[in-house]
Length: 435
Image 1 (spheres, rainbow, N blue to C red):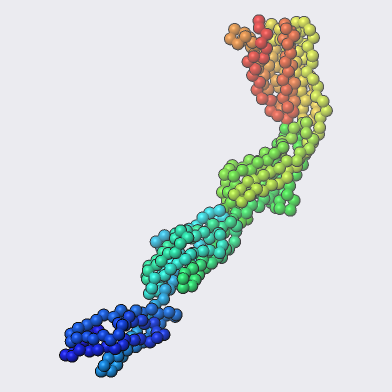
Image 2 (tube, helix red, strand yellow):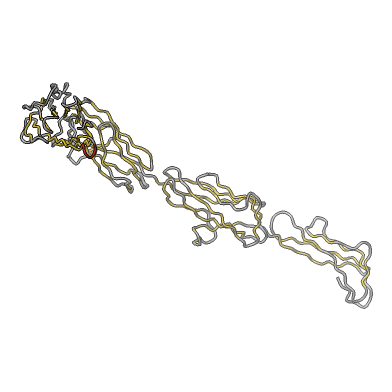
């Protein structure tokens, strides 16, 4: 206040409304202003309640009367607005929700919620929360209060991590000293789903779902014979299906290259083989298909066409020097006596017959055309101190091969399982009975 007149002015009182938002620090007692003098009185505007305009009157009381000075002020309020999106690609202000779209189960999709103070005064944010854990927040205030100036903004990363297929909806809440603001969060989980079917009848090209039966019956097969069934994998879900393994047990084998990725609706065919052996009359195995969405298991069944009795044993060798005959090979100067017996898948067989011999090697026949088993002895005493033996043949019969060192009486026997291809035999130290 200033005295612009030529005479002193005595101010007896300075006052504002008792209940208004304005406060004035009036001087104690009368205040006399000389001509040209001035005084500053602190005037405070401290509104309460709802936003809007506040009015009052400052009254000056002097010896010459009173003078009213109108007072007014505007009560501002904080206001929250949202922008949402990914990275720098944010939608304009005014968003009411954030749609994450589709995401594979187990994946993580991150978006940004930009919280904007759209009001005229500072905004105090006391927390940002989600009511569903599948939507994780990167609230960066460390549990404290974050103050945003007018027009300022703060980015909150939000990650959607679906744990199952289907839509998920949550609410993001921004808590402030002036009330809460909410934003809807939406996302949809995608997951592959394994469906198994078997070609039935075999070779028909028609597939039957295994959901109801849960098993594949291969029927009966001869020992060592292969029986195949075609199995179809289908991704019956709406997300990616990744097959990491396909295993079959107990006489069965699956032939599926892995890993294999199937898009929704995509099929993949593979073969499962059944190969029985002579000693097991019936089979119950399992096919397990492991995927990123779990394990699919199917029972596998099969049987042997016949179970053979005991096979004929290779003939015993009498003591003394080897005596060649129709069933005995005499090798290495008649020192080693060799006999063999076989059994075929029809349970037939018997003692193998000598087909040919040249002194160091020889061959047996099992009654058909050609040689079924060739045997060779090697004197390797100088190098290894032992006699070596080799044997091979194009047979899948059960084979018992017996060799006797007639000089020492040492006996060795080798076997080949019925139904299995004869694996070439090479025993470099078969008899360490040199010389």
